Amino acid sequence: MPGRPSPDQGLAPVSVVKRANRAIGLVPPLAIYVLAVLPPVWFLWQAQTGRLGVEPIKALEHELGELALQVLIATLAVRPVNKWTGINFLKLRRAFGVVTFFYVLLHLLVWLVLDVQFLDQIWADIVKRPYITVGMGAFALMIPLALTSNNLSLRKLGPIRWRRLHRLMYPVVLLGAIHFVMLSKGFQLEPYVYLGVIIALLATRIRWGEWRAALAGSAS
Image (cartoon, rainbow, N blue to C red; front, side, top):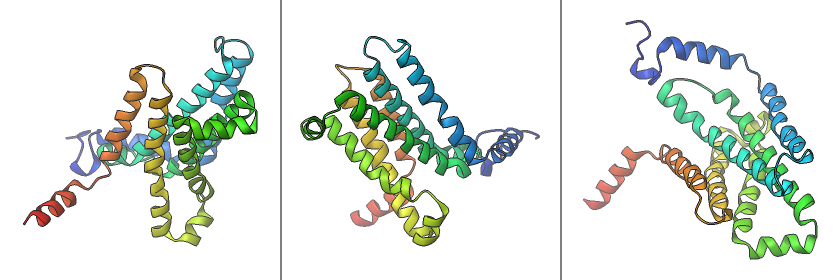
């Protein structure tokens, strides 16, 4: 039947998948980098014009950090979306990762330069405030990912070592969600929604069949 999804192409109708993949194929990674500049510029304009409330620097930090987490979740969702629907964003996944690092770096710079400002206070906050420690840990893990998100690194490391290195994305996204939960004052639903979505996406990476077989083998 026309438009009916096949088992190999996931849940979306074949015609929709083909049109979506054709459109995605026309998008160069450079376009993602150019578009990625727009949200921070918008947030900065809002901060300068008093549209981010009475604490614009704190609000700017929050907006950039949450945006980074959203793009990181989108990056993590690329493979499950491809598996379940057949829609393929794989060619843009590396660009999504670089954009995430860009947003996290801006989030960190706002905190360092506009918020804390003093070096001794920066170190004291990293050591004494657990949510900052967790956030800095996530940022540190992102550095090798950002530095190797290019074809030269892929060739030098080889596909297997490159993929192993980029599994650091999993602890990064989990630490990012924990950072968000820890910095929230009182109980707020939104950070836990992010954490739940991330845990669900990470669970899709587990090879449950192999895991059950291993458990059955150890029990026998």
